[in-house]
Amino acid sequence: MKTRIVLADDHPIVRAGLRTLIGETDDLELVGEATSGPQALDVILATRPAVAIIDISLPQMNGIALARRLAQECPSTGVIVLTSHEGRSHFNQALDAGVRGYVLKKSAAACLIHAIRGVLDGGLYVDPAIARRVFDMSRATARRSSASAPSLTEREAEVLRLVAAGLTNKEIAHQLALSAKSVETYKARGAGKLGLRTRRDIVRYAAGQGWLANV
Image 1: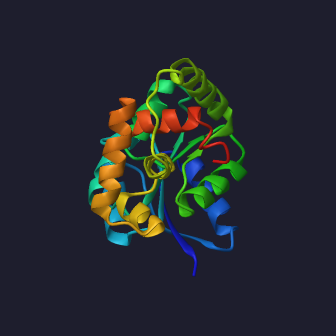
Image 2: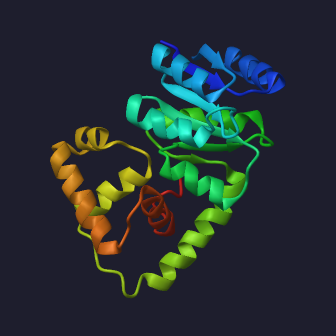
């Protein structure tokens, strides 16, 4: 069975290139396209694809706002942001919105395919062009704070690692043979020990610990 993809970008040339890329990949299928945020939301809710590839700078509703809506209304769809923005601010906003892949438009087409594979595997994909900058900063922060950081239990660390990798509570519960309530408890307890308030904080901590080294 082919993986269903929706593409949202207001640039015809970009869409044409990605349409060709997806069409030439045997196990991927493009099931919808959109040129604005509201249109993308409608198409994604109608088709329920496995992955949605969206531009941050969509008109009428930008990609960050769209990702937040999708996290609430279509959580089964993994969102990959395709963007020209390399700044940490956009990256952090994307993580907070629940985006599972962050790919730069200037990167090779192979990066997008890797991102799709990573998201389908339940992971988090960050374009190598910015991953080193973000993760090196996280590791430096982690080293500075490791001496005074409270220790996590094995289960708390395991749950936080999976949260950072982009899995939902339900997916984590299934993988660890726990109830969703237990997952939320371990997540809250571990995050509380470390003073982590948002998913972005959890991802940064995970990166600093080397938990995302293979992402």
